[in-house]
Length: 280
Image (cartoon, rainbow, N blue to C red; front, side, top):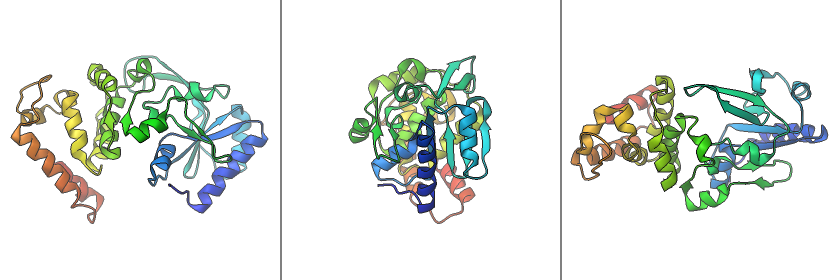
């Protein structure tokens, strides 16, 4: 099971206790909870605070040291390596990955707040004071099934970056993307994504234990055709939706990518990236 560093655990619990004493509740949400359930290490901690209004939350956090405001409009605060936020309401306001109107709402229910997340395995909350899991969409069951399942089909398509997140999660976690999620990912346009966001997800994919899982999924979902057409010829097919996994060049490329990944751990990060891109 994932452990906090001792000082981080103490700070998280102290903040959660202060929130409780103010009539609210602080829950750890997102990837840290998923990783804890999987016995994986995770450094990033996200606390979501319910039942405390923004001015009171800011005053409360000021008592724990220097607070850095990341998103005043929807109240996200950094306390060193701990991010604290209110549950968020999001509405699509235009085209693009960042085209959302976002407001913090401490009155939201845990289920309502979790509905905005991408996959069920990322929609689990954990109470650091009571050790209780709050799991309205059976994310724990999907972890056991090693399955990536969409939380809310209608909301999933609002953020096209989630298609790339599906690919890198599949490779990093060794999970299977379920059929409804695959169909949804194929239907979402990707031409609104800025290059830096695409690279952010590709970089995570390159450093997965077996990047080939993600690259194979990207080919199957048509992501390669849409974002990396130079690689499409390796599949033995000129264009989607036909995909031929028996294409020798593509199979060889996947093998080379995985072999490169196991040989780079002793290199500096820039060289690791260069080797992985060279393998691709």
